Length: 393
Image 1 (cartoon, rainbow, N blue to C red):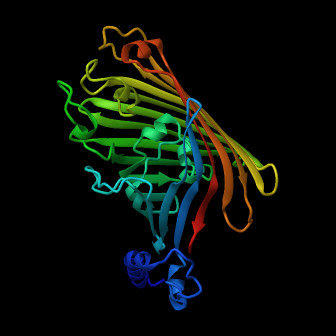
Image 2: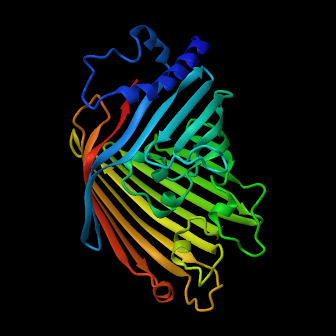
Image 3: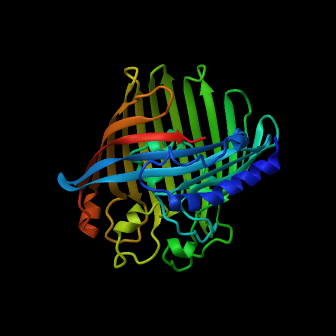
């Protein structure tokens, strides 16, 4: 393997993408233009993959049963390039084009980049990863490819799921693996995320530690994905996060269940903070608790047909007593159901067409209703479209 030529070719390919896109027309020109990658050069890509992760379709949105809008929408488009530049050096880059292009103040990379990391093979059982990567904090929901998710539960939806740092993975036995990560605790500064609080200062070590266990039982039919994370949000101020993911796979049926629990000295998830106005509490909201029950069922009931169902219950509590009129810790419960019918037309390509319904209900406590005027509401949407991690090369 000629490493220097391969790296040079990848850099050349990336530099050409902008000019090629600028000249391309909307009509199909495949029959009139030569391949971007000459046939004689394609062997250089034998250890590199390019994947277009897509979820697109037509969606109709409703609030409290009233139609809001019907439109075509690109829900997900994440372009991924990954592979080996050496037998012991693996790289992965994934850019989410449906996110902001603003560079983040902490790690200086744009928010839309999910992955920009390099993994070094230290031994047969130990790998070292450095760069922007996923926080390996457990749960089946977050471990799935994002294009297969139509709606995330609250904790995952609001979190910084991709952070910069370093991590070690140890495949201790054939059935059990462990990882340990040290990451930035966020992508933005303390001042950008939180309003000032008397006596509270941003930490000079705003890092997070993540410990993860992946287990296999019953010949791999039952798997676990458990983790504990500790985030340093400010001086002597932390977020504790636990995720317990479990999945049972039986032939054409897979059943998953996650429990997630997030105890936050500062309201990092931010759902309650958005509801509480400054005239009640003008500072960064403290002492919140979020937890979630999430389940998913996937069933391939015929050769080309499948059905999936996701359901979840999200709970938000404000544990602080700074408001003298506070009567309960309960703030809000959110409920979600996501049934989906899927059709796989071809066996040799991972592409499916889908029709799905996403229903959400939000129910506030009497205290939240009387204190900040919160109101219960429901949202829903119908979608038809397609999903595919298209393997370009």
